[in-house]
Amino acid sequence: MKKMRIILPLLAVVAALSAVAQRGMPKSLQKLMNAEYAISTFYVDTLNDDRLVEDAIRGMLEQLDPHSAYTDAKETSDLEEPLQGEFSGIGIQFNMKQDTLYVIQTIAGGPSERVGILAGDRIVTVNDSVIAGVHMKNTDIMKRLRGKKGTKVTVQVKRGNKPELITFRITRDKIPLYSVDASYMLDERTGYLRISRFGAKTYEEMMDALKELTKQGMTQLVMDLSDNGGGYLNAAIEMCNEFLTHGQLIVYTEGTNSPRNEASAIGNGRYCNLPMVVIVNQYSASASEIFSGAMQDWDRAVVVGRRTFGKGLVQRPFKFEDGSMLRLTVARYYTPTGRCIQKPYTRGEKKRYEEDLAERAREGEYYNLDSIQFNDSLRYITLNNHRPVYGGGGIMPDIFVPVDTTEYTTYYRDMVAKGIVNQFVIDYVDRHRAQLKERYASVSDFDRGFEFTDDDMKAFVAAGERDSVHYDEQKFRTSERVLRTMMKGLVARDVYADKSAYNIVVNHRNPDLKAAIDIINDPERYRSLLEHGNPLYEELRAKGRR
Figure: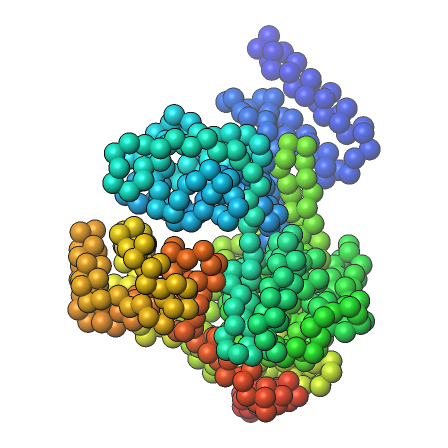
């Protein structure tokens, strides 16, 4: 009798599985569905069927390449928002000061500016919920401030030393997310453009910035793609089109189940003859590599910095009804010369892949050119001037700029990591905002005239001591210049309604930018690099062959 009670449900399972098998599905898919049915029906504990399926999908993807991934509905929304170019909210830049939301800037023309919220205000409540002094996470605060366009939110604000709170009723609206972080003139001829991501509106932002720079006298350009992790392929293609001539290949993709697909310039580019240097580093990836690779392969720009990340796998999105998404790798990106952007990887070894940048640092690649491989298998020939360039996963720049770590100490690390730098700047701006604006009318005036006093730096050190960062005289002196520059840049960002403010200040100490300026202001060297390549690389290749 006992055996009969066990056999009957098993017979039911067999019948159910047979019904599935009769649907004409591939045997592998039948097996997967049968396993899911058996687990969800007979497992000893209660299971969430949706979670079970998601875990199965993630498990399958873990055995593939490092960039195929599954995201649930919330994760998908969070990933897509920065690339869409806008979200709905109240339009402020904020920071947390002693567990209180401190308004750094209001977005020009945004909902908060329209109702009269000012930089320096502290938001205490949101829709009757107290957010100050309750150790609320930034993400939870943002959930309360953001919402659908047209919806209203009531906030109470403390302004200055006045004890009473001011109540504002704000109607949420679309808030732009910019991907052009900075755009200004480095000198009377050289424009500077820093792009942080390739989003839906990046091309339009770039064109607006270039138009404005041209009005200011730009006749040559430095395009900064350092730390740019990529984004939309179409944005990179549209941008490349402005710098290439008709028919020039920009990028092509190809995979086992994806035939070769090419994107080429259509011939209406407005900046085809503009001398240009492109800055990249080890964090420049994907669309950044497509742009810099196309510029390099057509001898269109000199690339400076360090070898890029090497993310050259094409993901096709498959969206599900619940808002979740599967991003499956279907092809690889290739530059016009045929360089595969993707760095080598072993399927299923995602952790090792993620440690690649740290491994490159340990091997000295960021500091020493001799540690980089230059051999025949990595060597390609450009399409106009037939000069050598190098691949090997990522884009090897024409000019290598080593990372300078001499000023970075553990004291610097701790003062930044514990948020002391940020909190000190917030407090400083809170006390001196009006005075700074009165004394320095523009970012340029501030950049030329402002410096922290010795008393300011003593107060900074004391702030670290209060937060358990022990003062070390030697380490402080070693890092003092870089700390002063960073804090000065943050003050400029918080005081002036100029998105370029931070970069205008800190770029004076940017070795990648210095190399770019030196090259673009030396026409003979610039031309030689585009016509012949870097002779040092060829020497290293010849040395390696011996």
